[in-house]
Image 1 (cartoon, rainbow, N blue to C red):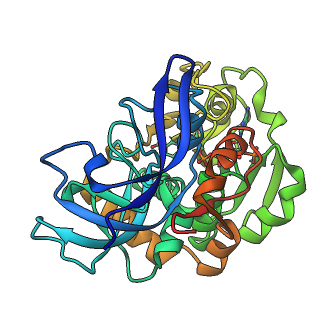
Image 2 (image 1 turned 180 degrees about the vertical axis):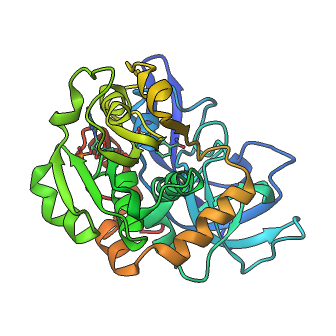
Image 3 (image 1 turned 30 degrees about the vertical axis):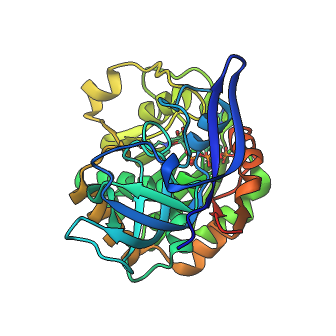
Length: 334
Ligand code: NDP
């Protein structure tokens, strides 16, 4: 293996952050006794959080210099962890990658073995990154609804931020499981795409973005929300008796101007979903279910675009501007 590898390298300057593509060597890795596995990275991806990190819009990066990228998939090349050996295919989501630990926008990564998920046989490294944190979080949301007893015969599921990464994968998964899905989007021109993924109805997100009443007409058996703010408040106010809402995102805002009425009069359950520090058992359950329930043809629709490392900074801005449909795969060797 050559000593050099290419990475996106973010350093802190007086003006903010400087982002460049740099040739690095193993000596550049931050020293950490926990990093006992080396991975030849093949693919990464662009999540909303990567957008926030690379643009510096939110303080996602906690230590500098940083090779960002919250996801990676590749092949183990060296391991002092007995659970992994050279040649093993692996993926990593979150665990602080791209925040306080070097991440996936690099041709090489050094990581603690406890971060690694064996790549499910159903997926190539590129497919795993077409799913990435966005798709794995969508699966966690669907599992959260299932654990609250939400079933297809109870009524419609609302998916917000539908044309984005979390929303697209959630629709494909819920359709496979037999749910009727209402996709809320600001991009009505993507209605064909959303229906191809399995949405039964597409609604304009403007219908959910105004101030929420304490209680609305009961409509949703369950909700997957990637948006937060008044959209989440409206979704909660319209959730049926004993329905459940899985909240994972803040694309509209981090506030939640909601009444307690849906909780105390309808027993609505609001379930928070975190992917970053989710325990390994939850990750393995999610990836096993993704392998079972995510239709490869729909995954190809969602993650059909692959970009090189050099195009990541532009894609980071695009995702914050709501211009990315589904998910984008990053070929770190291109
Ligand atoms: P994307 O940008 O791919 O999707 C977000 C979607 O939200 C957009 O495509 C858009 O959908 C919608 N949206 C954007 N701005 C607004 C707005 N102002 N009002 C209403 N809707 C809006 O991001 P991801 O799918 O990667 O992530 C979605 C959210 O989930 C992010 O906030 C992210 O931080 C969070 N997240 C949280 C995780 C966790 O562990 N809890 C893990 C992964 C993601 P459309 O065009 O269809 O309207």
